[in-house]
Picture 1 (cartoon, each protein chain N blue to C red):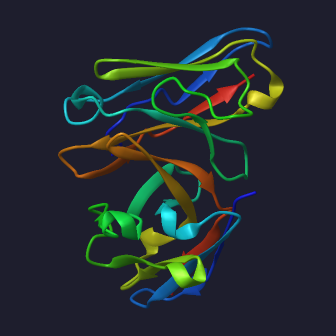
Picture 2: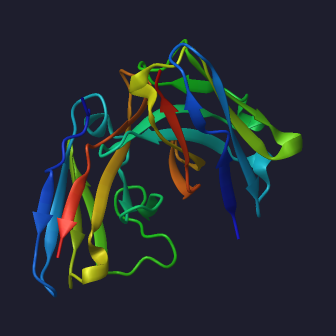
Length: 110
Length: 123
């Protein structure tokens, strides 16, 4: 059972904006631990998309943005493109489990 | 450019052991933490374990699901991380990924990933 809750799927038309939520609790996001986001294209390795809530690594388009507030975080994808079809995972640290936790993943369909 | 390549996967019977390797290049391996994740068929990513760089004591962390059965280690002279998996169960069937950890304030995120190696546990 994932400690971070994500919707199983979201969908949108090309050019639209979608938002993926990531809900944690008092032992992870609520304790101030950062959230990171990964994109996994079909059959591929995960790729870092957003680190520390809202920071984009070099090469990640600015269509992707992240935010965090309290026990929740979100990933926004604007100007949706067909190449954005992938699974997206949020990740943080849990102070009670003393380890890393991941969301169950959200499949984005364009 | 940084590269991580996992190896050592394969088919194994329940109860047996397997050691995975994560060979790296393109960066100073000893300066970084490393982590292992897995992904069961059709399922999401699961974090397994983590080892800090020697400068941070080489401390390890484990998920409850593998603690006591799996052991992460590193050989900085070979630029390689390892995952020793003992007493394997059918539920351990998955693609195993290694990743590099980047310290941000107090905890880590994973910025580079390998392509994975497949482990199948079946009689």
